[in-house]
Image (cartoon, rainbow, N blue to C red):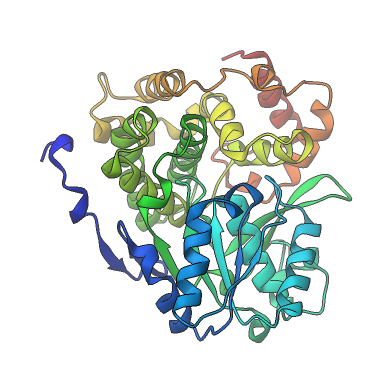
Length: 394
């Protein structure tokens, strides 16, 4: 079937992997039913300040009210959420007598919302539940509030994830908070909510989905299911991201990118690598958008990892129908896609200096994604990659 002949009305389904997903245009109208299915009677909708004033949020609140489900609003979330955002959200949840969370927005809002849901019934500080060792066993599962996730961007896939990335302001580091119960109970994936997303956000979030899929594919270990999901996610990005970027009203492109984002987050249960190890501290230290940071770093990490991933890149290039399939073909596709999307070639162009290279590399080496890199990395190796990113030395 030609991409141009796809009928967006056919892009609809109910899925139960990795959680219940209600996918398709107009599915936001099922929000109250989804909340009720998880036992909610008075949820708290958590979003970011930019979305809070938009009709899509007001319409959701009004629709819930009309369905006899009064819904509160918490929007004090910054672009890269910090611990204080979570603490304030928990206070709003408890103060309003809420019994569930609607995570509404992009990755930052959904991450913060999931962390708020986790913390509503816990007694320890947030960062005691960081994804390290057996910290997740400290969580009281009975104290985790139910979550309905409603993504409005196609990138992080946080709507199908069991973790949240939150900045610890005391150490200026991003910490990953994890527990299996953080997986939203229901996802409403409505591509209509992503229509008209600005091109630069479409580009950054779309490249985030690409980075998730390609790092999952390259992560060491045996996980054929994750590999298959990652490959199909990459095919969707290849086929649909340029169209979504060129035309914000292209429903088919928006729908397929929303799927690709969820697939990336599902696949990276296998692991991530140095792209995320570097982008996490870059975001914490310089406030760089996570997807944009991943987009800048990706080719430099691919180059570093080349000896370990050539066979996988051959498979990917063949799937995508790239000429002369192999590592070089994939690299050229990634670079060409970045140019099409207006992604900076270097961190310097994105406003990230090399001044704190040692501190950033040390944080990257401690990031829980570092062990997933197919070529072992330490602070020295990560510093070298970061300096190449800054200078544009590829």
